Length: 451
Image 1 (cartoon, helix red, strand yellow):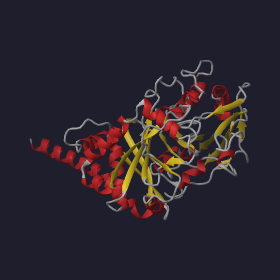
Image 2 (cartoon, rainbow, N blue to C red; image 1 turned 135 degrees about the vertical axis):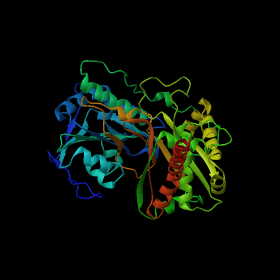
Image 3 (cartoon, rainbow, N blue to C red; image 1 turned 180 degrees about the vertical axis):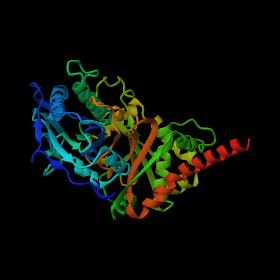
């Protein structure tokens, strides 16, 4: 039983140490080159997913299917290393077949209780993923899995997948391949993974033909670091707000004069403005919105089907605080659209070339960074006992996430951590549109009632 709304009970591990799951059959042994998009400092962490299922799947079956899918996705069974032939610490994958980490546990609670608990992010959820003791990021295996069985017969599946090997599309592709191998072990994968990252090699010599505002030099002299310093000065509190189609439509109606805009463009702008408003920043400061954009079809030639490495870049919209907050939603949405329109093949090649300079880093010091997980099919994962009751992120410390809502394809859950002192203000600003749209619905109902 859950004792309180703040803390999960501890997991009981079936074994003191997890097992290593190597590929089922021998796989190629070589060093896998990682592109400049893979080898970015701000991606040196693992993407941690949490799935809650009503019915459990045999751990033995999951381990067997994992070993089989790792034959196809063999780099995930390897280990990260650096290129010893140069001094730039370029990351590589040592494809040595060492294996993925697989932990098994039990928790004395039910799927229903966990579903209620997981609706709001909590640091306590970290108990659901085995913590690998490591001296550095390089020492953590690229794939860590924990299966936790529940007292009701349900199951939690948590995965940590190294972001330098996969982006969101790639992780979804891998997880669906694993599920496919679990339910249809005698069938080929619907999408074969494409391993080679050389399609994103920089030009020789590198040519940076554009200004790339999403990046900065590795220096502390930028005045906008005041934002970063403020965010790091106090504990961050996770916040979660769900937007249903009526809420999103209400936001889009604020984009006047008439403006065609996507759900992502609208929600991203709304989250950005709410974040800036809650931080009470100086009107003269420049703030940025960095948001993930899939570029698999934007590069020429297009990247091959099955490419599971990092095939995204961060689009960058920027504005002064004063202009962003004094204008309506239309202004911010236009900035997002203009940032997307810049991402031509030549612009993207220039960005890849820029990253050859090891002093160039992503400008997260003055930015809200949004990662789009809502349309990747992550909530459709099925290992044979049905789709998840809940899909989310295990941690929310790093970026703002747009998550899918199980059972409601058109809804989006926005999760972001903000300073403890402003979390109420941020949620108020984010929820304004929700409350206004509900008021409009009530007025419409009253009008129909009068008629």
